[in-house]
Picture 1 (cartoon, rainbow, N blue to C red):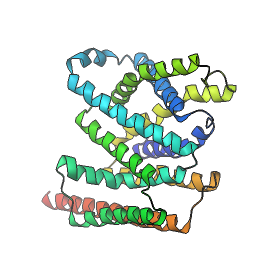
Picture 2 (spheres, rainbow, N blue to C red; picture 1 turned 120 degrees about the vertical axis):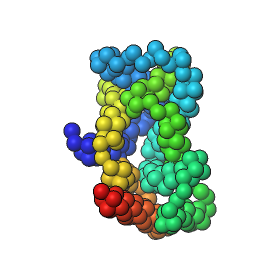
Picture 3 (cartoon, rainbow, N blue to C red; picture 1 turned 45 degrees about the horizontal axis):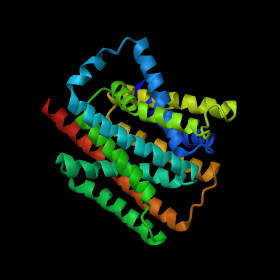
Picture 4 (cartoon, rainbow, N blue to C red; picture 1 turned 90 degrees about the vertical axis):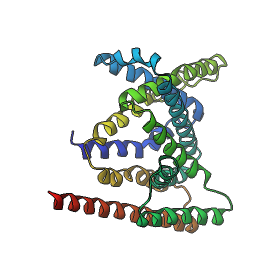
Length: 296
């Protein structure tokens, strides 16, 4: 599959995920995430076993730093998943979509703070504009858009930790979910023992969807991994907005979430910031390509 198509499909699947979660909305968010973690591990280990790619697991005992960093990334990813599922089931899909709109600019900020990266002068404008959008939303509603900010920063920090523990995408997500699978299974067994478990006690469709959540989690990750190294970052930077855009449209059209004038203004400010950020990135890439061509 061509790289751009694989990337677009990954972000489309992430974008329509609220439709999937809503089908099991009567299940508590923590239980959904536990099933997502457990069944992801089952699917990914089956995939690795089928392709005879399990040998790397033997070397993990000699890499305590890798295990520690992966445990941290697993914790950040689970926190992100948990808040996202809760937000969808609490009819806060628009707040969740805003978090993923903000995320690329959060990544820029984290790069400055933790990686020693320097922003080009024109990159400061979208970062400042996004901050202004958050301040406007805070002033309009009297509180921080905490769902959006926690989702943006938790996923940004997850990406930051992943840079320090550079396992391949398939191996990395397998190890992350592997570290989570025992706590997830333990929680599911406790819930089942209390007679409050959903799996097998709801309709056949809901039970299937809980089990299939592992595949739904893994497929877009694999598509993304297969495309990330084959297409330019500038193209990926544009494609990534498919996901929050679809979430935004689903929140408004499918679930009729309230979208006030004040929230519209805040979104527009942040969309302008993203537009500036994308245009600046494209211009910089063209400048670099022209400079390289001139040296040949």
